[in-house]
Image (cartoon, rainbow, N blue to C red):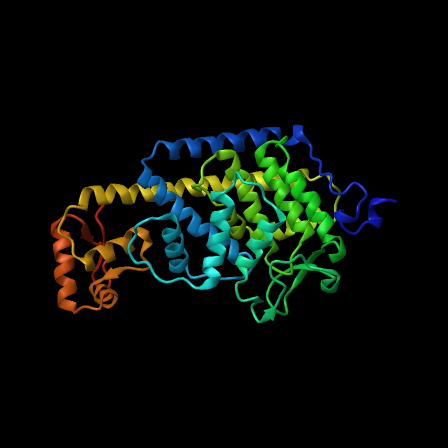
Length: 372
């Protein structure tokens, strides 16, 4: 049969034996490995507290973005609080988390924190159950912690909002899912032969192609890819987020998946896309690290000053990236205090060399962190 007679790669007789041009990706792979090594090496030189700060920041972003790719928007404060509690970190401003947030956090921490343990069918089904604690995906009731079956056919992989859905490909029939997953999990459990970055790329694409569940497949495929990477690092802390980068390039992600599904088992193009995505994820992580180090430096300079709770709250917001300009009115509104109290707090921080008045002027005087 010619290739046109196969609509999708999982229908081809050579499925699931993926291949790629190792010579073609050799340079890109080497660059990505070097960039990853530099990032991990830099993290190792930091103190434990900074490592925990970086890991919390990256895991928070990872949980938020892997859900956002699928159109599920979680509360950032709930995610951060849930992660901090589970990681045993003492941070301020903890808030309760709902069951959906707890479920996604549980999956991510289990995937990376227990990366060295085998991924069994039971464990993966447990992850799926954790993602959907109520048994519903939105308003639709789904089978939780179970492979999809023939009654769920056809399983189409789509993106876009209601009324604007785009079908990217159709997954294997439900009757084939148990055997397909046994094949996949057996491969995943074997001693690693390929480079770990390539192995992570294959794991992601393979599981997305099978699409073994009614919903949550993308999130679980990214969790498995993260698990493969974490397994090779021997560190439960995460210092970069592939999902956050995929979220930024969501349109390109779905386009590449579609191209791969309608092609052959030569996934060189997917490998190149995945490696470049990793590179951008590492670069973004470097910028997060700079922010964490800047915050650490700030508190080392000013942490001993007699700051009250209101002042510390505002400084925390400024260090995280305050939206707009800080004025005395905003200060009072955020802290639920009088305007006079806000002015006294701001005046004290200016005298201590923490804040300075902006030179931009305007109708309201605004303040910035003083440059060192």
